[in-house]
Image (cartoon, rainbow over all chains, first blue to last red; front, top):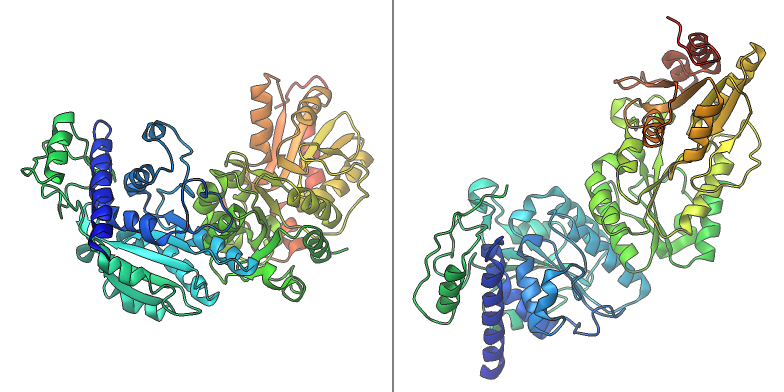
Length: 272
Length: 309
């Protein structure tokens, strides 16, 4: 990867993080999870997905499903950055470039299996990406879909696990341990790869290898940091959902640009 | 023509149709060879079945989805509601051995709350054909419709000839009578038809109404029955909560129409598993039992609708 490409990706990721922080003002949002997968989503739209403004409904587009709907601020912000729609549209529903609604965990692996199946039986070449949370792997329906994807040899399907090691209020390994994730998916008939979900060069090497194996669905486990980019949020179990004041948001954006560490005073809210 | 033959005919005419199942092939055994890659069996995985059907529908397919009614509507309920319902995708759900048709299966396999669940989903159509010919007409209708549908599979032979074409939301008036309006749907239509004959012999005139679809519901047929007969009776192989009796009460209340309503349904328990005829006998749904229960309910009302103790 050239320094210019890397610089461009970093600049986009920074803008995306700024938007996520701004979206956390007022009603608040799931900022930690959004920041953990921000680099991944930016990279997917910059270098992997065959979809762009104007082709978001093309029959041969690549699909991206965000199954962990809580971090949709990262997806919204990225779509704005790539020009899918104007930021003002965020006040409304029906956002161009969003394939399907989510929020209820464990659904979109199954929906993506259906899309990938149709592409397979129609002879298409598009690929289907699904971002799931690591905590989402608690849902049995993920593993049901994983079995079916392997049975149907869906090598056009790529599951990306945002491995930020947290779910809601706890560390994943303290509640229902997930590791070794590769061994679980391999036993289900999937090809597996682990990457650094904040290192664009590592992402470029990993995604360039798709499909990892002909006839097998791929799972990419992306190691990430919840709250990535903001020291006051990083790896904090109690910073799952935050509602910021304007001043706090300004301090955080300053921190993203290399300024002093912001402090978050807002009451964190536990949603479930 | 069988269900399977009609399904092949529909798939041949519409290349977007795919047939799916969660390894429940009883009614569609010969389809894999006929449909090739358009036959998709995901194994015993109802959540993935419905989620994948939603994905296929997003790509423009019309999935006709088969599983046992209990597991389809209850194991996968949230997938139906969230993926099919919120997006209003044209997924067609066909539930096997619903209601008393589960016969000797125990409570785990008895779908007697499926209709309450499915009709609660906005935009979901709910159909309970009276017999095999009506089911084939319903299948053709829902396969060409853009909305989501749930249908109780019912291949029982007809007790009478259907004269009116199948139209969603239009009930079929099978017999005319001014004493009792007998509203029913699905596999018990035959028993209700036979009970109607017995009641006529006893001097009680019955308007037998085959509802056909519970959603959309034929409000006019319900309101006419309430106005023109002494007593409205609903008969259904479903829990008393959330089924046809509930719907009739809702329609009457919404239209501010007074109604004398007697519900014959499953009380708050699952039924005793047995062969179909024995279930009807044991639970009080044989033609003889129905005629007796309806006559007893009618005897407590006079023609002005006053109730006697």
